[in-house]
Length: 362
Image (cartoon, rainbow, N blue to C red):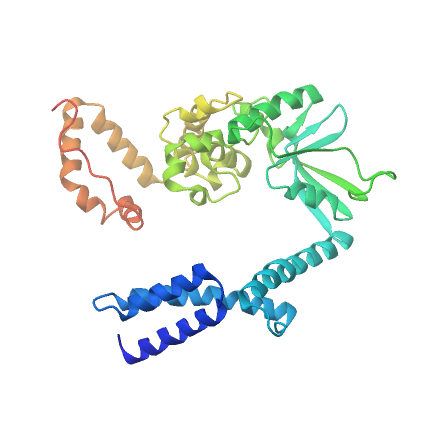
């Protein structure tokens, strides 16, 4: 270890022992690191990195506590003071002070899982409790609801809640299922003074009576996302919009027009797993095929793309050219990672290799 590194290590160890005079577990950690630093042949740079991380965690806690409560009282144990002061009193006081100020004068905005026409209620389904916080403290509550979220009766709501929760997280009931019917009444202690429900169309009414009307039945459970092989490999960010996965690959082109999201209908292997898992039985893979036909019929695909698919279909419509293309693909896979679409894929992932022999050759 260089003299400079040894000096840094000794300073960090001194900080640790001062901060944890009576904490046996952390004191033992620093003692073990000290012995390791003195032991010949041990990678000192790695141990020094551990020491830096450990010491930074200590210093950050002390900085938070000092910023909110000032210097510790004389004779106080630093470890206990930092824990109680920084994490309990300081951070919690700041958090609830901010929430309280927003609650007295602010606006709470939520979505809506379902709206009940029979009672005029809106239903929020959460597992974290954030929905009840936002609908209880602020003076004004604004609920944003898609027009397809309305159900006729509370009995219909109970059926859909069972479908939603079992398909989303395997639960019989979510931790928080909230029904709100209007603003706070005179005899109620919490809730907003004003409740505004904003019903969004945004192209949804155009789907009624058409080929894609079944997409209005989606309850946003996410079951299709969990089983989709493309979503599991690419992740939600690859869909570049609010809705991801198979349902997003169908719904986003319908709401934003297919010419603005031409790649999403192709984000599917058409294995049909999404259709099988859908609790409301939306034929998602069939709708994806319909969108692909729309892309071709409207001429949205580029000439290069149309030419590529034409050559591919011609090559694979004959047994001999199919086997020839498979042999060429096996041989030139390394070049595909350097040119064409495979180049972009191989920047972040390894391009899969073809099997050395086909099923027919086995």
